[in-house]
Image (tube, rainbow, N blue to C red; front, side, top):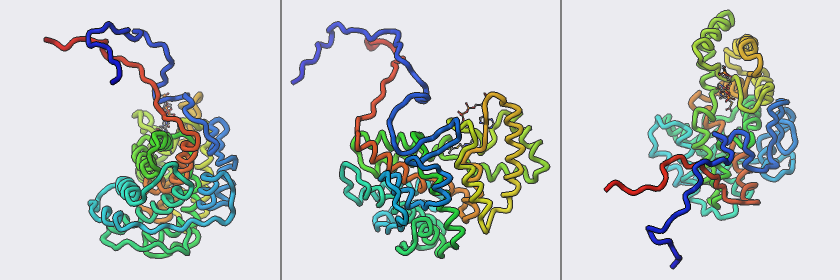
Amino acid sequence: MTDSPPFDAPIAEPPTTDTRPYSPGLEGVVAAESAIGLVDGINGRLLYRGYPIGQLVREGSYAEVAELLWTGEWHPGTRLPCAAVPLAVIRTLRELPSDAVPMDALRTAVSAWGATQKLTWPPTPDQARALTAFSPSALAAFGRLRRGLEPLDPDPSLDLVEGFLYQLNGERPDAGTARALDAYFVVGAEHGLNASTFTARIITATRSDIASAVCGAIGALKGPLHGGAPSEVVDQLSQIGSPERAEEWITATLDRGDRLMGFGHRVYRAYDPRAAALRTVAESMDVKPTWLDLAIQVEDVALRILAERHPDRPLKTNVEYYAAPVLQGVGLTPDMFPSAFALARHAGWTAHVLEQAAANRLIRPDMRYTGPQQRDLPV
Ligand code: ACO
């Protein structure tokens, strides 16, 4: 038995004024050390293990980049084919309504996968590879089931992104389409201690398993403040309709206090390097959305107006703006955009899971209590 104070013992009241620093949203708080990715908002740089994102998009593949994030080493020619979906997961996906949100289906699939794997602590690079290879197959299976089609087995001769499109559409994508989506996956693979990555690290820090960490991360990414706005970029451009209407539409939108989708960022004060990389990808696609030229012209007008209205706060194009034409160009429907982002981010999430586990400390921040002091229940 532990000694506990008698109920009526005098207690030392906590100080009424708590002067410890508090940062709502943890803004400016350093909550981890990481060697995985550098998000340099001032200079508009994004480095994975020191390598600039532009170089990785031009010269690397998603499989090579994922391996780099997991191991810290560059292994040219690394392959990562999609993995088969366990029967228990397929059964679970069959039970979902066909109008379920794809992010919910993906989160459910990862949870069911975790239940089939007997995942041990600490998490390993092989667990990270297995989960990253599983999720595209599961999302593709849901994409078919909701259209009344049967899931397809993965083709081991195809790399991850090609394999995902094959399992989704039933035909092998052309090289340009596969390359464009692969570039999107590279760009989306890692981005520092964002909300979903932090979630994955918090779950890992309790010594929970990698599937639980990724389920939590998918849940965090689903929120509209994080999961991005590429489908809203498509809506925005369709409302603008033609370059001549851009000035008037943007002015009216900002006058109403609304925001332009695909612009601004919490960290970047310079042009988001991921937007620059994806613009190049979008422009070089064989089959581009018809509205890509409109997007480019609207961007110029938007940047000029935002600079006039916010001379002291640079508001530049963010990754979502040019993610939209790439994702639509490869044939994904807008409701699949957030789940495609989640597939790409698996490499970063699981790299952070491995890094957290390797130097683990339970993440348990403090809180400033603002409720009543101790009192007695009314008689
Ligand atoms: N359009 C118009 N004005 C904007 C925009 C925008 N896209 N972004 C910021 N501002 C303005 C704000 O109105 C605010 O103006 P004020 O000081 O006169 O009130 C000022 O810039 C600062 O805004 P904050 O909300 O403090 O900026 P924050 O860094 O927190 O916001 C965010 C970042 C949420 C991305 C914001 O820029 C935004 O809402 N953008 C549009 C949505 C979008 O594109 N989301 C995808 C982001 S990329 C990603 O998540 C992967």
